[in-house]
Image (cartoon, rainbow, N blue to C red; front, side, top):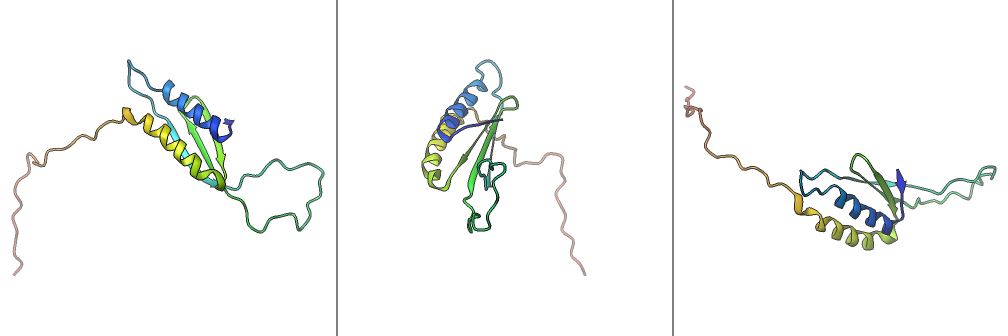
Length: 122
């Protein structure tokens, strides 16, 4: 899995959609997942952990992963960057929403069913 900064992640996500959009055959699926995470940088070995070093409130980030089954990419978006990332992410998604399939409508008439008979309880 490749961990990227938010802007390169959006570029790679765009490329991922383009690779999976085929003009000759059916378009392949791209899965995107988001979850809250308390990602922290790597801890230094040998450094003693002081009791006052731990922050009282954790700085949560949004961990976003995308895959097409072959290539996996991910990024973490901090609280400060969420609004800017959201608009850029929405732009990428809107650009690639043209391959969606329409839902098949069913006929309202049900064939082969007999009309129901109401019975009165006496």
